[in-house]
Image (tube, rainbow, N blue to C red; front, side, top):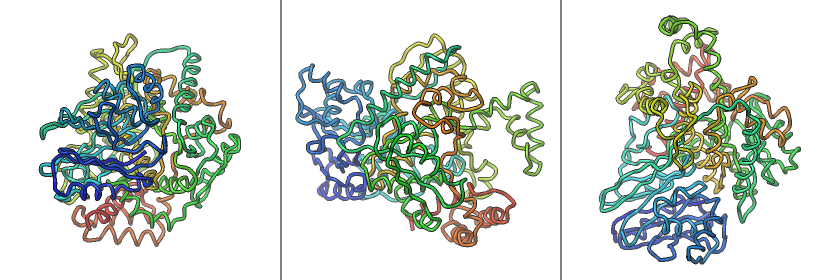
Length: 629
């Protein structure tokens, strides 16, 4: 795990510039640094040593000297690839996965991506062709950002490294703010910093002669089938999970595990053979503390269990640093818990396993059960339900109101992901400049139409990196459409972004065995009944891993990271601090501050639970103050 950066074009100060860019991401790789200053390319690298501690220095060149690479991530099948390359006559100087990667690229070009199993963000310069290729892994585990600044094409693992490049003028992207207020993250390619973009998951960027083009090499698509007998699938899933965990444990340093009270992290902690596990909680009652449940799993697995209880004050005090390391605002308060969890783990290990991806792949979110509950009123004509929903929207916020509203909406209207913070009408009320871009539904419509069209026309399905014609494909059901949205937007935009940034803030590598190419190949074809069944979520997954965890953990309802912000925002100290920010001059540049104050006041008085809305705005303001004031 490392940090990469670089730029094209000649500069007299290129050494000084690359050193400044590397310095800004030193936290991603405190062990060593390296740079390459060629004629038309400058590459920078910060290293966190995990594999081949002595000889894995970067930038690294291919065996024939034509390619120069900087690489952030891990290639878990590098040993198999190395044997293949050695058979082809390529010799190696190190035992690192980086050397295997650059030589795989030399041997196969873009098709090398089909062979990779891992997480990565890398840049490779072809000296002969004078071309640059950037690539980001299949699911977006590792980040890559880029910008055209004057005559230079600039890239890095983090935005702050691009901000260090001379000539960039900081400006807030209003369109990103608009989408952020609904999604709690920005799903746009252009970041919150105008002119700086993120390379999307499963994409490569090819740069030559001052121009670049972007190509998709992978996109996660569900290809659900029908399987009346789940027993063979359960065994198959158990085997592929064990294989993935085995590959993700490859390391020359100790690997620990993040551990909550849930089934995902519980399985990884127990099945991996790790010696140490790490948990955080809050001293605000059992609702916000899963430490005791995690301790049960740790005891069963024989793990040394480290616990960090986060205080209210240190939670607040960490916010500027969290938003600095996030690069962009994130309205997900669990990022702060992950910040402290990573800090605790980094005191003991360099690498941890974490359970990201299991819910998106296997149907773990409770909201995925909603389509089943709505079937109770499916006999009512949709137009009638729609009319009832419109009437219900005018009622006070009473029990059953939201059900009637959602029953009168198609999934494309009601679901934008696991978070839906501000609706369009609410955004118009609080944003000083109103809505200048598309609504959230308009933004997602092309994707919904794309998955709908592929269902109808029977176009080839993509499984892993191989495309094949499906013989068992059927139209996606509403639950699977929701899953698809989360796989392509929520997962990279929120879940993986905070996992990377919060861990690397403390020079810690997080590995996610569920987001493995081989695991996805199986998960993509699971029928709905393998995911939502028996009154629970992740049905077949729970069955496949049940032997590793305590019985009550297997059937426990998903909680995520429960954060007591709704409680704290009603207490006088937080209320006063947030009110000062909501009525500040900075807030007035973007929002109608009287509307923000009203949100906060209604929450404190118990009229509404506005905690997520308040937190989303607060996170943006703290980020803005950190980067622009």
